[in-house]
Image 1 (spheres, rainbow, N blue to C red):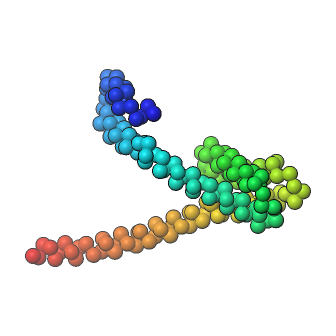
Image 2 (image 1 turned 90 degrees about the vertical axis):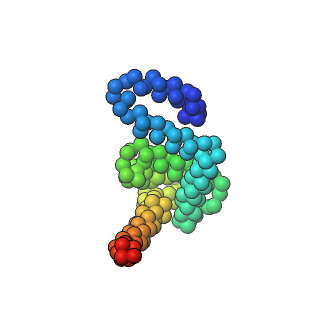
Image 3 (image 1 turned 180 degrees about the horizontal axis):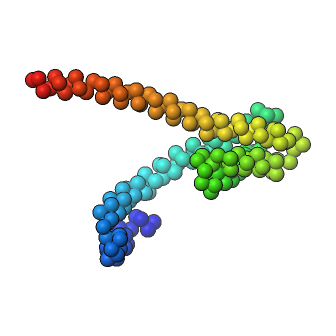
Length: 174
């Protein structure tokens, strides 16, 4: 809300301009603010949050389906537990400051499964299997898709660069 109040932000900028270290960076700060102001407009922010919620719940649903596939009953309680575990493990991963929460998120998922799911079938082996499956489906599959997309884009850009000298030579000849 504070970022959407232009008058407040410009008053803050006016005060910051008097500080020698910040004064040199005021142009960059104004550019940052203008872009942030546009990105955080209620409509755009609402769309981004909506897409994020759908995407994030997809991870919870994937975990729920994995637990069903491992033999647990598909109940509303299991869906709520799956959502809670994924949310908490994601927070643990984020707080750990490790890339992708590696290690912390996995420990969180497995540990919370063992603590929360009150079923004799939930063993440490089953918790580890569910954890590895959900992390592959949610993290590593994304890494693989992203790597594939990067390779395709790189190949496309390479072809564009290779064809550019020929186009430049033809343009100078005319």
